[in-house]
Length: 141
Image 1 (cartoon, rainbow, N blue to C red):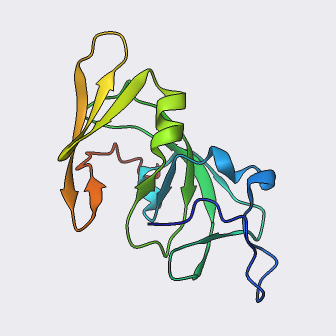
Image 2 (image 1 turned 90 degrees about the horizontal axis):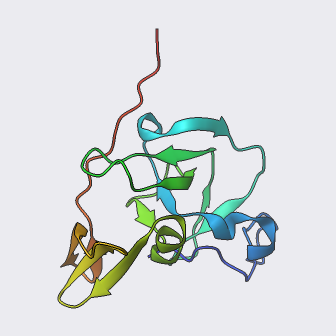
């Protein structure tokens, strides 16, 4: 899983994201730009540092919508074209939405008020995976 964000700069790069640079509000990292709404180019030369110490460039910011639950908000999304898996911050997800997360052999995201299960994740190769259906935003021609 990615270190979001890294507070220890790599000796080979001064462009590593740190909490003081505002990236700590990121909820989601993804590689496909067609799912971002409110997309804007990312003007900084900052990177995301992943577990193998690779520096992955950020190219844009935006927000996401889920087809199966449009009320969930993913307003702080970074487009990282070279990331292999889309990642999200459970902490930021619970801050941006009225939800809580239960972890057991599965992962359940529940509405805080109704206790209704909004999303169910499964454990796959050591990480919890949510199979999400994102709303695609195709460019208008």
